[in-house]
Each structure stands twice: as C-alpha cells, then as structure tokens.
Length: 504
Image (cartoon, rainbow, N blue to C red; front, side, top):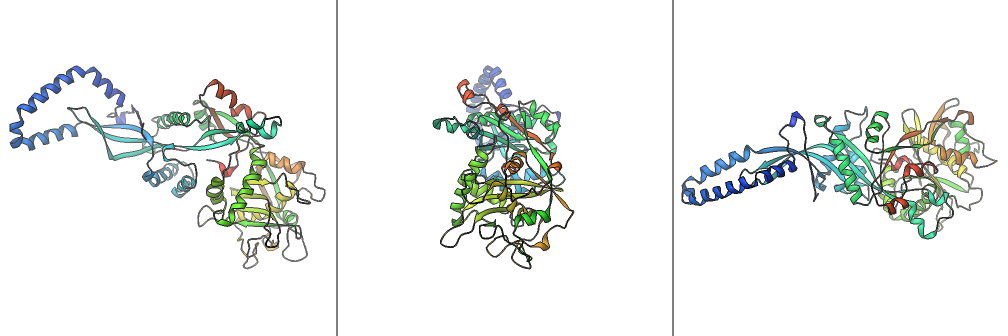
C-alpha cells in the first residue's frame, strides 16, 4: 500500500505503541536541539576518525545497543501483498473459529477471493502490529517486516448493484439506463484476533475502508449483519437497515415429484414429454459454456437486475469464475446444486436455456439460493411457474445429498438430464420447509396456470423477513447525490433482493 495508515494503540497491554504523528511532533519540538546535537555529533565523528580504526567495533556495538533500546510497537493499517493471501485466509479461519459452531475453513476465504474477478489485495485492509526501530541520531524510522503480526481484518468487495429502476420506471431515457447501477463496496471478512480485541481496531479499519471506497468512486457501502447487537455497532458508523421480504412454505415431496415429471406408470418419468429437460450443470468453465453464460446473463438481467434493488450485476467473468464455481461445486467434496431448464433439441440444434435454480440446506430448512426464468420466452406452454415446478424437485434432491448419478437407479442419465426416481422421494406426510424470497413466491402465485395446482398450502405461508442488509451512503458531490439516491430510500419503493449466491 503506497499510503499506509498509522494508528495509536492506547491499551496498557501495548503501552510502547507510538504513532508517526507523535514522532513527527517530537521531531518538530526538538528540531533545534537535534540540529545542535547533530552538529556536535558530526564534530565528534570527524575528530574521532583516526580512532575509528582501532575502536570501530566499540562504536558499532554502541550504536547497536542504542538501536535495540529504541524498538517501538505500532498498529499499521494497509492492504495485503499477494504473498500474504494464504496467511490471511488462515488468519480469518482462526478468528471465526471462536465465533461460530461450524466456522468456515481457510479454503472458503481463499476461494471467495481467488474466484472473484474484482478481487484486489489492496482492498483487503489489515491492521498489523509492527515493530519499528528508531535510530537515535537520525530519528529514522524503519519497520522489521519479520515482526508484523496480523491483528484485524476488513475486506472490501467491489460490486455494482441495481436500483431496479429500469423495470419500475418505464419512462427512463435510453441515455440514462446506466444509472440503473451503482458502484458499491461490500464489507466482509470482518474479524479480529482474540489477542487484539476490545481495542477498536475493527472500527479503525472500517473508517480506513470508507476512505478507500471513496478513492475508488464507490457510492455506497453495504454489509450483512444478522444479530441486532452487531447491527447497533454498524449503525453508529452510519449504516441503515433495509428489509428483504422472505417467506417459509411447506412442501410435500411426493406431490412435488408428480408436478415435476410426467407419471407414465414406471419408476421414472420425464418433464413435459418431449418439450423440456432439466440438466445438472457441473462446469461453467469450458468452451461449451460460453453461449450458456450469455443466456444466463441475459435472463438474470431481465428477471433480477431490472426488477430488484440491491441485485448484484453479473458480468461474464463473474458468472464463469465466481457464481459458476460456487454453484457447480465449490470444492472437490461438494456436489453441484445448479439445475437449468432447457428445451429438448436434436443435433445439430442446441438446447435453449429457459430457467435455472439452486437450493441449499440450512439447518432444518432449504433455502432458494438462486432462481431465474426467461420472462421473454415465446416457448409454447412455458411459464415462470412451470419452470420453478420442474426444477425445484431435483434441486431439493441435490441439496438433500441424494446421489445424482445414472448408476443404481439414480436421478440423472449419462448426459446429466433429470429422469426422476420414485425410490428417492420422501414419503407421504413429511414436509420440507422452503425459504424463498417473497417476490418469487408472488411471481408463482400470480402466474395463472390452470393445469398446474399449487404444491404448497396458501394458508401455510409464513413471513421470515431478513433485516440484516445495511447500507451507508458515502460522501459525494451534490450532483452525484442527485443521480445516486440512497439505497435505503430506493428500497422503500422497489423490492430489495440480494441472492444468497452473491452474499459476502
């Protein structure tokens, strides 16, 4: 970092800490005496040049002793070097180990950094406790790199988020469509080593992060804090809550299975006869994926970015390197939970992507991690409701840990196409709890498909809203503020939604 920040640590535990500002003040106050002392020292050195040959070792030893007696400890804030990334991920793992019953491993933090196309080591702000030496004669301050200790961490995630204004303001001018997105800095990986807690380091790091975000022309800072007591801490820094509407519904898997497949009397079935197929994606990083990613970008923009405030804008590289790797199996031990709905096609024609879904298990519930459907599709008998029905069953099966293979009565064929298997269906009377955005539930409820009955009981829908997302509008000019209104105000009129796959 070309411009590190030095902060004073007033704790008695490290009462040898000094700030550079304090050192500079001392230098100003004692400038005259130091100049005088310097001249005296120069005279002494000149007069002693002849003696240096015989007494050089003694002079050197004396200087070493003086330097050793002038080591100071200081808290220094700056960005990471690329060589520090692995050490930082291990630091995060150690810090969170005391906070969570099942803390994320170092691999989790490394993956989220390495796969992020916007990752920048200088946006990982670290408070180091560093040892400095002050040379008594020249007052030169130098740091001993080997004595740096990571004390606290804050990572800034560079993102663009939607205001949802394109869909909700039909009169928006063509030239102003760029105002649909706002450059923001997400805050994550906020942690402090147990030995350095209760010293205000995280607060100092956060304030330093604000400066960096302003330098990068970011308009808002956002973060997610689930616990009310943690939210209070961020409110003191100017953050405000935004409510995202979520709902809980109860599903019966046997009924969902019969909605998802055509029951032809056998142990397996197919989706909508010869029209559609559900495919399990295991890779978005090969040459065959380019056209699929372009379809995902187009559908996501229309279904989510244009409709919901806060929705993260997804570039081609973000889909390929971040979302694709998260949903297709984040690590070798993970299974894919990324299902897409396609039209069936005979070569050389290629299937047309219509929708996708991802579900993950969280405790006793299943959470809708991702969903998107082609709102402009002209495929006969296609609808958002049908797409959701067809994809939800195999997605929940994946999240349940059911082996999705073509061996031993699995659920997919050799091409990754879902064929269904009744032997793996949860028996009658057992409900699955699905946690999903209320805006998606409203889409399903408003979709009038006479041939599809609801697979959930409308009387068994329960609100389970998320108040954890928080925004802080960063300082900017009056002109910029006019074009970039507060996300808190925007979310009062436009549904707010950040998909769990984009969370940090």
